[in-house]
Image 1 (cartoon, rainbow, N blue to C red):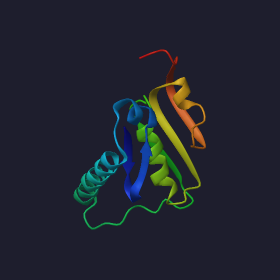
Image 2: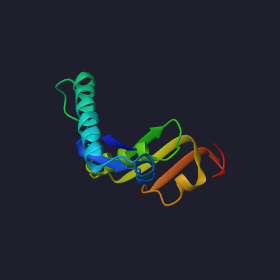
Image 3: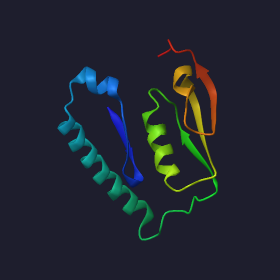
Image 4: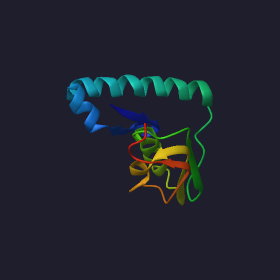
Length: 118
């Protein structure tokens, strides 16, 4: 129904939310729970080290494949908070419509599947 990333970035999948009947309160509770899990994971991986400085750098966001694109979009939102010069999303495969209109400056997909492909 959506995705979260560092810095409080949230992407909602309105189609899934509408189809499943998830209320705003249920969505907000899920976001809060997932942000807490993410914060714990960041603490585990990063310890007391600060996040990398992404200012004026080219950042490559890698995803193993895009279906709805929510996880990649929220990752790009989180990265953009750090003012990179450019964001590139690299994926193994993605549906064509997921690639169209994407936020990143560059989008690289090894294989773009037709929209009707599962």
